Amino acid sequence: MRLHVWEPVIMGNLEQDQQVWEQLRKNKAKYISLGTRKHDGAVVRTPVWFVVDGSDLIITTESTSGKAKRIRNYPEIDLAECNMRGRIGGELITAAAQVMPTSVYADCEKLFIKKFKLMYKLMTMRGKKNDRNNPDNPDGGRIFIRISRTGFAPNE
Image (cartoon, rainbow, N blue to C red; front, side):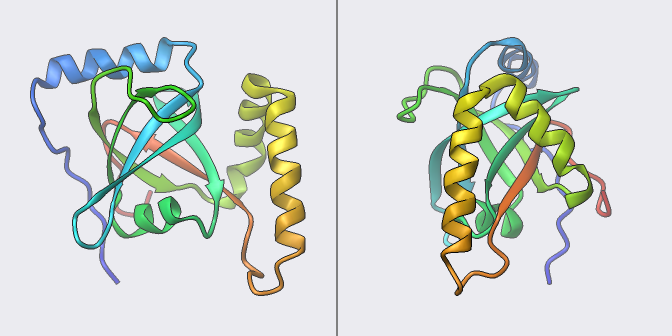
């Protein structure tokens, strides 16, 4: 098992990246383009919904999704504001991602319901139906992932 201690990767102007991060947190955008890394180093981009929680962002996905697997292996990500089809509309910045403990899932879900309302409820109902109908995936289900510009402590 690999120990994930994240150190920020400086890709350009750190002050400018921080301004982009703050703008993303304050913006009313619904989607970010999440860039996760595969074992061979290739980046896979996925548009995802996000909510703001303090100084961090939170995304949600199925526990068995490709992005969840890639984040578990390589928590270093990049992201930018995008539209629902993934077309990037802002600058890429680096961050760290970490799957959150199940004890905070109810609070995270409230944030998503507050921002996305009926659309989030419909999406999660569809996901729950798919989980019930998939006996090959007993651990399937929705997870929440915290994204931070400052990284995480090893046991956080």
